[in-house]
Amino acid sequence: MSVQIESGAIDPDERRRFEELVNERVAADLNALQDERITFGQQAADRLADYAGSWAFIFGFALFLAVWIAVNAVAVTARWDPYPFILLNLLLSCLAAIQAPIIMMSQNRQEARDRLRAENDYQVNLKAEILLEQLIELAVELKAMQARKA
Image 1 (cartoon, rainbow, N blue to C red):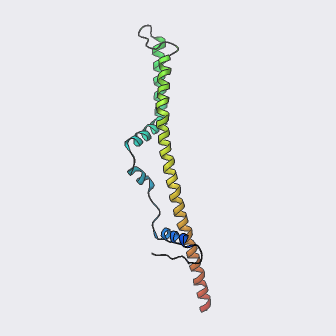
Image 2: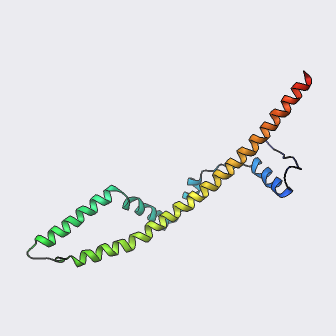
């Protein structure tokens, strides 16, 4: 279906862009497009962010901390990290230092995906608005033609 917009309503560049927009398919599956271009590092960042933000990670890590503290507080021999648990503190700091930028990478990818989705939504809404205006104009013209015949 090819649609033409009246030439006097808007300037030629906008009219050409509107006609292109109306005559092309603008709705797209952005998730599929993003997933086609995802790199191994981005995929790993997404998986880590999903796991690090889960209850399984929180409970598992709480259990790890409890075992670490219990073993080092109760053990008479083979204490590798006695109170005040300096090695544990170092491990936690390293984990946070590594995990935070990876989670931020995943959030940045999600933000880019959201921007693409918003742009696509805008294009779809603009096309719907233009087509609706044209349908209203056509309905008014048909009503006028019908009134003249009667």
